[in-house]
Image 1 (cartoon, helix red, strand yellow):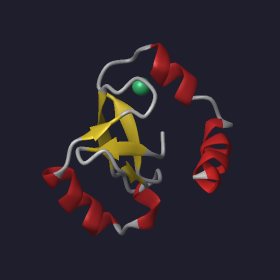
Image 2 (cartoon, rainbow, N blue to C red):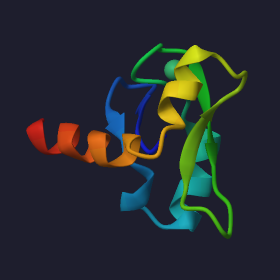
Image 3 (spheres, rainbow, N blue to C red):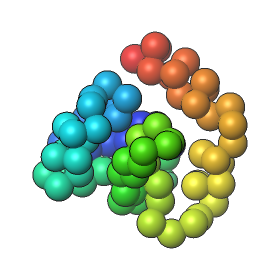
Image 4 (cartoon, protein in one colour):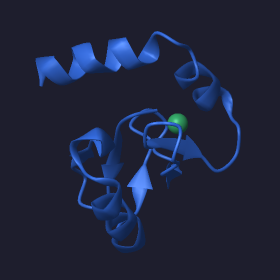
Length: 80
Ligand SMILES: [Zn+2]
C-alpha cells in the first residue's frame, strides 16, 4: 500500500519524500495500516516505488494488493 499512519497518527505518503529521507523516517517512526491498524514495514527498493507491506500476510494485505487500490487511495487522499 502507498499510505499508512505514522506513530503520531498522521497519514504518511512515501512518494512525497526522497529515498534518503524515507530511510531516516524508517528508523525513527513506526507505521500502521490505515485499514487494520497492524504495524507495517516501509519498503524502499530500487525498482519498486516506496510502499508499505504487512509483516504477515492477512486478509487486509490481499485487499491492498489489488491493482486498483492505488487509484482508489489517491481518490481518498483528495477527499481529505
Ligand atoms: Zn492492514
